[in-house]
Every structure is written in C-alpha cells, then in structure tokens.
Image (cartoon, rainbow, N blue to C red):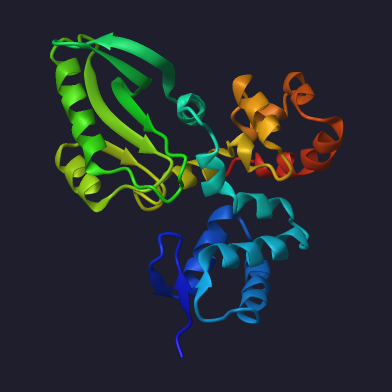
Amino acid sequence: MTTMVIKNDGTKEPYNEDKIRASATRVGVPEDLQLSMLEHIRGRLFDGIKTHEIFSMIKEFLHKSSTPYLAMKYNLKTALSQLGPSGYPFEKYVALLLSDIGYVTKTNLIIAGACISHEIDVLAEKDNITYFIEAKFHKNPSQRTDVRVALYIKARYDDLVQVWAGGETRSWLITNTRFSTDAIKYGEYQKIRLTSWGYPKGEGIMDLIERTGLHPITIIDGLTQSDKTRLLTAGVVTCQQLLDSQNQSLISPDLLSRVLPNLTQICQKRI
C-alpha cells in the first residue's frame, strides 16, 4: 500500500524516497548517512504523515549524527521566510548572494523611467548586463509569487528601459518561495529572469545558497525572536557575517559558543 504524504499546502502525494535523497544530497548529507537516515524514516512512516513531520525526523536524526550542522540546513525554507517582517533584509540578502558570485550590486534605489520613478530593490551588474531586480519576499513559505508580480515587473521594466542609457539590461524576479505556473509561463515568454525555491531546476535560490555557503542568519537553532530582530536590524542577514567578531556581541556568549562550530561548517562554499 502506498504511503501518502500531506504537503504544506494540504495536497497529498505518494512518499518518495528519491525526493528525500535529492534534498539530502543538496544539503551535503554523505551517501552512507543518507541510507541510515532513510531507514530511520521508514520505521516511523504512516499514511497521512505531514511533510513537516518527515523533516522533523530528518533533523532529529542529523542532530544525533556526526554532522549535526546539517540539521540546520533543513530549516532553510522557514529561515528565508523569517528575513522580515519587512522585505528589506531579504533585499540585502539577495544582494549579498549575487555579490558573492561576481555581481556588482546596489540596493533600494529610486530610478527614473520615461513616465514615473521606480523603486528598485537590487540593481546588479555582471558581464556588461544590468539587471533590475525585484526581490519578492513572503512571510508565509507556502505563498506563491503569482503572475501579477511578473506583470508589474514587465510594466516597470518597459518604463525604465525607454530612458536607460547604461547599456544592455534585463529584468529579474527573485523570491524566497515558489512561482505560480502562470508566473513562470509569463516570465519566460517576456524574457524575465526568474529565480525561486526550486526554479530553475538546479539553479533555484536554495541551490545558490548551497553553492555560496551564505545561509540566512535565521537558520540558526536557538535564536529567539528578539535575537533575530536585533541581528536583522544591525544588517546581519547571513551566518557568514556572524563569523565576524564585530557582530558576535549581538547574541549571548552562551549561544555563540554553542553555534560557532556549526557555523564554521555551514558557511563552507560548495562552488
């Protein structure tokens, strides 16, 4: 009998070990540890199990393994949704990700178009192409970025390029969640570059994070809400920034001593 899993959006799908292995490979779980992890899950599966319950099993297993820092990586989707409540920390986070792979970035700009002026979350330049980036942040990790956002991006871009004199340009929509089907269809047709959770395959935001090692600061287990607010207000949006001694006074010495060994591991680049 097929074991059905209830996803976060309430829909059901058959339990698929290939998906578990794919996510484990992405976060760097060694092959031998993956096999033990799957055995751990199989012994606790039941029909109607929820996705977050499977993730809890995985995190429990990894916490007790020789690589406990990998458990934090399974918080990534939730951690991205905590780069708020405003979208400004996410904009800074996107800029840091892109800077790490060779883009020259600026954030929170006002640029005049032919008709009106527009707020640009991130302006990025690489290989003589300038990207007008909308960093669309959602507090709910299950909320999709829909086609209305893509329509707005296209209208804004059309107004900007009429008077832009800085060379070749493209529009780019980056979000911490998923795109709706129509948003992808429209974005591809209009040549809007799209980056989301799981899209494009192998090039989504989580893939970029894994390659650069720039995990959001909110991924750290043990941070209180006041800790997160203090860090984000200070502009500390990545775990990498917490390795800088100048930022370490922003959390308690006790928590710092517990998380520092894991941070060193989680911040390793995989490019």
